[in-house]
Image 1 (cartoon, rainbow, N blue to C red):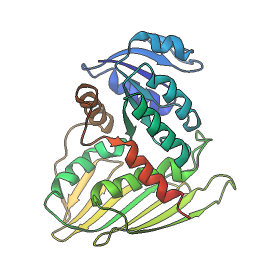
Image 2: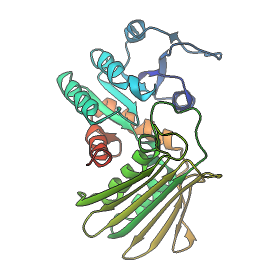
Image 3: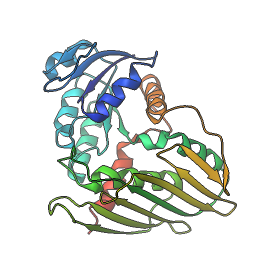
Length: 285
């Protein structure tokens, strides 16, 4: 499949690295405003010429504030598009994207790659016949200097809300969100959200004020206790290590993207309605 990538920042480079090793994809075009490294693939700084390369799929990994307009350009030429999280700046933009995707008959996916973390894949399989009592997710890091257009809610909280919804697989009955601005009055850097799914509770906590990186997912079911280290790709069930698939998150995401291109459906990829459900939590009054 011929694929193009828009935006060659950190996430765009990650996609490029993984796709270059995937024999199912041919990297036909890259788009950014400029390039500061040697690239062996066709590079463009104009979206019209980029889209003339006959692409089967486009990945948009540019800054969030560009997603809406870039996607609307792509929808007219490409019928499968993956947009990195966060999908857009707000709920209004997300709903506009949904309307445009429906109008142009585009299969639209959202890049919640943590769904394909080997520990998450194994944990999802372990829990297929179990009832979940509670979910607790912690995602801590140092303050990021590379992110300028969104705060921690759109950068990290969306990941963990998606995981909570992915595992609970239920409608949220109640939610409550707390946030702090410790370093920048315009961008929150600490957030905690509590979700009530009825018979399942979830708590997700993100921080940009930590001295070390932590990505921990703990689930208590009626049969067992699970502890997943999402940073180091390990999973324990009642204290014992569980074997994990030997893949990276982006490898798994790209394989599901291939299914979306071929069949216009994928069970594991997040879709626009998943993003809208998350944004509704963030924008709830």
